[in-house]
Length: 587
Image 1 (tube, rainbow, N blue to C red):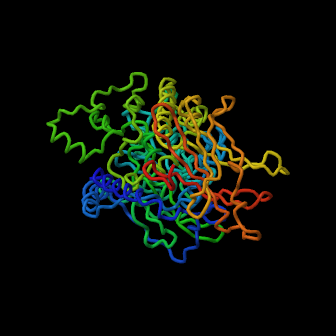
Image 2 (image 1 turned 120 degrees about the vertical axis):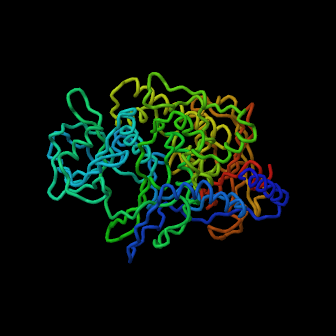
Image 3 (image 1 turned 60 degrees about the vertical axis):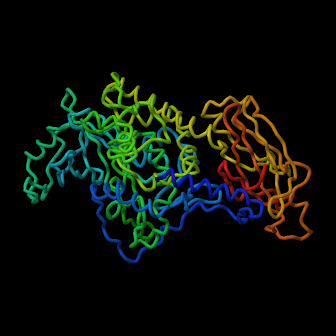
């Protein structure tokens, strides 16, 4: 179905290209980019708590939504909440961190935590217990005043789920999402005490007072060391009032701040690539949480990602389903149809995968058959399905910023018992990160970190500097890279004021700078004396074509700027990454 839509879209783009010369170019206003989304306004009324049923959501996303979109013929579109520099502003959903700012290994390890729990300082008062289901645990009041949820590993692949819940939260937080403070704790049983009026749910579904035998029942499923210490993940309760999960499509209608359809939010679309990196296959609405928070006398809804215990391999004992994880939905209409039509003769690469002998707890979490763009979750996700290449590139620019040392530091927080398991997980994360870089930075424009600089403050000469992420992270040979730069101006950017062509400097191949203007003239030379600083004739664009020889076609990026004169200099006001099929102006 989506292939049909893509075909129609390409036809429409081709038609657009034929008449592109008559269409006005996109122009950005002379102002600073938006870095703070105004979506944290005070709410006068409390939004209602919502419930998202797992089976109902699975049926909706697997069957009902695709059926509706089949007849709606919904065309692909770009994310809405993006600023003029093609970045996502800070909001109640997302805060820019490692993608734009340097982070230390200690900051990555802490995540959203402010300090580490002391497992020798007690008592830990159990206020409630969950003894039923696959994930039993305790609600515990700690001496630091915080309330935590203690969750335990089961007997199947012990330590994987708890380490995944902690490590996953560190990566999600460093990327920019709101996450709980998760950490691994080892403690002795005698530190646990039952609080007065502590309750649990009995086998009959009714509340009853918590008893010692309930504690024993939960702890009987926990992983223990030889010295009797019990392993758990302690997840600190979030501030505010819980409002239930958010959906990956639509709006929360009782929140006036929620004005961008969730499937059109870049941070939700591009989460598909982060989930692919970690194999967070259960990344769906049920593993999210909206909180009504109050900050500086403002009450608003803050959106969190929670529950990362499924990362780094399947959580179930069914090997057939575990093999599917990341490759196919549990109920995948595309694969089912192909198997039916081919009588099952089409081989699936994951069907012959074997569990890694040195890291059996991670099941099939590897890198050999990892294709980032083909990754799939447990069932379709409406935001993931709408991820465009611009959304993906935004997340790639963040993921590649994680250094090997930061990845090792994040894995350390999982406190894995076996050094072989830790080594495998670190290597898998590094290799999968590199596969993401190779697929996207070699295929689409890899330039980033644009800056307009003056080497000496009093100097009037201005340079445009940038990084080539393909050279830096995707092992592209700088000797096979060529940049062709053109400086355009005029009402439709039809005037070429200058051009140049060069290769990266081998002394610093991933960093390049060019002197502005490119050529002998600048837009300021074309305007009449006394023209306003934002006069249309002062508008120009630098177009950079990137050639990665020999196998990849050129990609382009447009840098929109205003020329405020020799003394004030150029101001970058917009970045545009056009698709390869259609350009804003001809070569």
